[in-house]
Image (cartoon, rainbow, N blue to C red; front, side, top):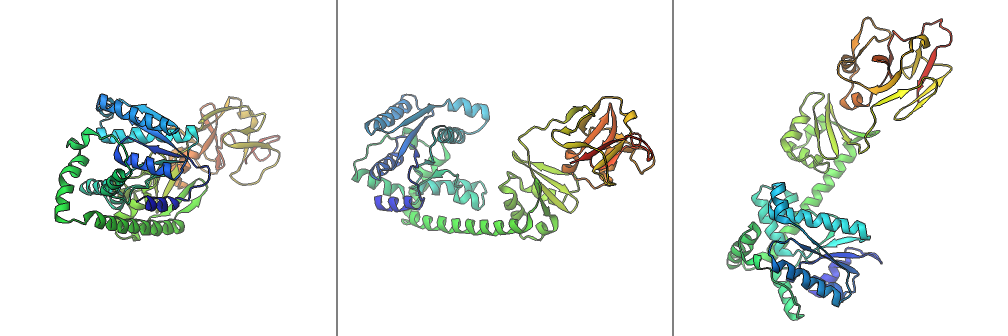
Amino acid sequence: MFNKVKEHIKKYELKEGDIMLLACSGGIDSMVLFDIFKKLNIDFCVAHCNFMLRANESTGDEEFVKEKCEENSITFFSKSFETKKEALRSGKSIQMIARELRYSWMKNLLKDHHLNYIVTAHNLNDQFETFLINFSRGSGLRGLTGISDFPILRPLRSFSRQDIELYAHKNEIIWREDSSNSQNLYTRNKIRNKITPELLKIFPNWINNSKKSLIYLNESKHALHNILKAWKKENFIKKKDCFIINKKDLKKLQPNEFFIYEIFFEFGFLNEKDLFSIVNSETGKFLESKKYRLISNRDHLILQKISKKRINEFYKWDKKKSFNKDIKIEIVKQSRNTGEYAILDRSKLDCELVIRKSISGDFFYPSGMKGKKKLSKYFKDEKYSLVDKEKQWLLCSAEKIVWVIGKRVDRRFAAGEKQENPLILKLS
């Protein structure tokens, strides 16, 4: 087993100076990996989570791991969590919240101490248990194969619990046994203590066979990943700060709902029905994930990253000098007959000028048109997408629109043809 793990670790192509952060509970799996790392002279630190679920036993686990690190001059990190309180507060299961707390803390350790990878001691049995849990929940390929969360490495994932036990006994490894493992309080324990022994009676080689099945499933996942990558490269059209995706191209994919879900999964859109609905929805409908917005706009979708930077939507402006904030407006001497220029009557700009985004109820008197027009109607006629509407800036005098910047001047403020010394503005 040692040589196989050694060969497996080589596949990670670790660089000189890389430092591992080993998640170590003190149980047999993590203590075996602790021993292998020592023998391979891998530079590593240890992270231990005390979830405070087993009173003195939890404290004993922490002390045990700490002593092992001190004996071997290995940097030791530990953190205690009020796991039950966190689970009640969040409404999540204890196991789920423990996992979230564990990985969140360890990822922070990577950043704070300039470490390179998190390493866990998950084994083949763990993978099969996860497979059964996710299979019962109706998971697809991603759930059945498990998610490889970079930067998390799992060198023991190809080894069974029996392999690990044999190594531990042969190498006289000392570990701590978690008493809760023998209790059937959690789904994983029920699978481990009830289902696995029965499967071994019926299929003595099920562990090795399940390993082959997981390999095949992972290969299928990678094949799908490559297909989706090629499709996105061809059909995600880059436009400044967003992507345009033709709805017809999405609708050609079969099975349709499956591909739509897989295409947008990486952007945080996880509801199949909502995704399928927006592909077939009218203009203006949109979905939001934590980082992205997906907007329906006529015959295409717009995929836009939600900006972390909060843009100020209201500025006062002194018309005596150019403006250079979120947009740039220059005062120039000559103009051209394009929307980028505004030729204004200075005498009508005696109120305070502001540059702002649109608000409900805005209207103006478009030059070249009769009467007044609601700005929302103007946007519709000009076929603005939701993104275009949100980006559009207005130059206003008090509450009156002077210029839909870069598009059209309000005729109440437009300079006459023979007017001397007009204020000429240019959107740069």
